[in-house]
Length: 179
Image (cartoon, rainbow, N blue to C red):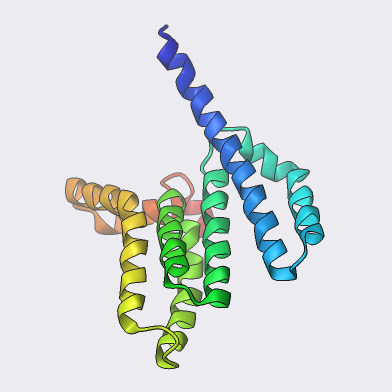
C-alpha cells in the first residue's frame, strides 16, 4: 500500500475534527456576541464540547461536523449583519450557507427564514434589492458543488425525481423518511 492511501482516511478524520473545533469556536463567538460577555460563550462551547453525539461525529469521516462548522459560521455572520448592517457580513453568511447546503441538504430548512427577513429588510429599505440578489449569487456560488453534481446526475440518468429524492434523503434512507 502506498503512503498516500493511508493518509486519505486520516485526512478525512482530521478534517472532521478540525470542523468540530471550528464549530465550538463559532458557538463561543455567537453566544459571546449575543450576550456581550465571554462566560456564557465558554459555557455553551464547553457544553457542546462534552456532548457525546457531537464528538462522535467529529472523530469519524462524516459530513455532520463540516456542516455544523459552516452553518454556525453562517449564523454568526448573519447575526453580525443584522446588528452592524454591513453588506459584506451578509454576503459572507450567504456564501457559508451555500457551502453548508453543498455539504448537507439540512441547510435548506433555514432558507425560508433568511428569505423572509431579507424581504422585510428590502421592503423597509434597510437592504437594497440588488444586494439581496448579490447575496443570492453568493449563496449559489457556495452551493455550486452540489448543484453541479445534481445537474450532472440528472443529465446522466434522465431521472429528475429520483435525483432530487437522492439529494434530499439519499438512496438508502428514502423509505425510512417517506414511510
